[in-house]
Amino acid sequence: MANDNEAGLGGSVWTNDMNKANDVASKMECGSVWINKHGAVQPNSPFGGVKSSGLGVEFGEEGLLAYTNIQCILS
Image: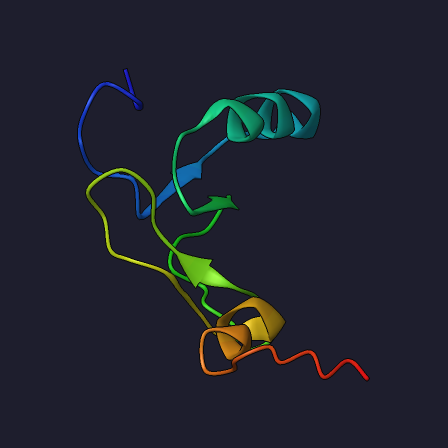
Protein backbone atom coordinates (compact mmCIF):
# COMPACT_ATOMS: atom_id res chain seq x y z
CA MET A 1 0.00 0.00 0.00
CA ALA A 2 2.85 2.42 0.74
CA ASN A 3 4.07 2.22 -2.87
CA ASP A 4 0.60 2.61 -4.41
CA ASN A 5 0.89 6.35 -5.15
CA GLU A 6 2.84 8.80 -7.31
CA ALA A 7 4.79 10.31 -4.41
CA GLY A 8 8.12 8.96 -3.25
CA LEU A 9 10.00 11.50 -1.16
CA GLY A 10 10.19 9.76 2.20
CA GLY A 11 8.56 7.18 4.40
CA SER A 12 8.94 5.59 7.78
CA VAL A 13 8.58 2.14 9.30
CA TRP A 14 7.55 1.81 12.93
CA THR A 15 8.18 -1.48 14.73
CA ASN A 16 10.27 -3.14 17.43
CA ASP A 17 11.29 -5.89 14.99
CA MET A 18 14.40 -4.50 13.27
CA ASN A 19 14.64 -7.41 10.81
CA LYS A 20 11.10 -6.74 9.62
CA ALA A 21 11.76 -2.99 9.56
CA ASN A 22 14.77 -3.39 7.28
CA ASP A 23 12.87 -5.81 5.05
CA VAL A 24 9.94 -3.41 4.63
CA ALA A 25 12.22 -0.37 4.22
CA SER A 26 14.17 -2.01 1.40
CA LYS A 27 10.91 -2.54 -0.52
CA MET A 28 9.62 1.02 -0.15
CA GLU A 29 9.78 3.16 -3.31
CA CYS A 30 10.99 6.43 -1.82
CA GLY A 31 14.18 8.41 -1.55
CA SER A 32 14.55 8.12 2.23
CA VAL A 33 13.17 5.64 4.72
CA TRP A 34 13.45 6.19 8.45
CA ILE A 35 13.02 3.45 11.02
CA ASN A 36 11.18 4.45 14.20
CA LYS A 37 11.50 8.18 13.38
CA HIS A 38 10.63 10.46 10.50
CA GLY A 39 12.23 13.42 8.77
CA ALA A 40 15.70 13.19 10.33
CA VAL A 41 17.57 14.74 7.38
CA GLN A 42 21.33 14.96 7.77
CA PRO A 43 23.64 17.08 5.58
CA ASN A 44 26.06 14.17 5.11
CA SER A 45 23.35 11.84 3.76
CA PRO A 46 21.88 12.24 0.27
CA PHE A 47 18.24 13.35 0.23
CA GLY A 48 15.97 13.13 -2.79
CA GLY A 49 12.78 11.61 -4.03
CA VAL A 50 11.58 9.20 -6.66
CA LYS A 51 8.46 9.07 -8.84
CA SER A 52 6.77 12.52 -8.78
CA SER A 53 8.66 13.72 -5.72
CA GLY A 54 11.35 16.11 -6.78
CA LEU A 55 14.24 16.10 -9.16
CA GLY A 56 17.78 15.18 -8.23
CA VAL A 57 19.46 14.84 -4.89
CA GLU A 58 20.69 17.32 -2.33
CA PHE A 59 23.11 16.87 0.55
CA GLY A 60 25.90 14.32 0.76
CA GLU A 61 28.51 13.67 -1.92
CA GLU A 62 25.78 12.76 -4.41
CA GLY A 63 24.15 16.17 -3.97
CA LEU A 64 27.46 17.99 -4.45
CA LEU A 65 27.99 16.17 -7.74
CA ALA A 66 24.98 18.04 -9.16
CA TYR A 67 27.07 21.23 -9.02
CA THR A 68 30.07 19.81 -10.88
CA ASN A 69 30.96 19.13 -14.49
CA ILE A 70 33.36 16.40 -15.48
CA GLN A 71 36.13 17.26 -17.93
CA CYS A 72 38.66 14.92 -19.49
CA ILE A 73 41.76 16.41 -21.07
CA LEU A 74 43.62 13.92 -23.23
CA SER A 75 46.91 14.56 -24.93
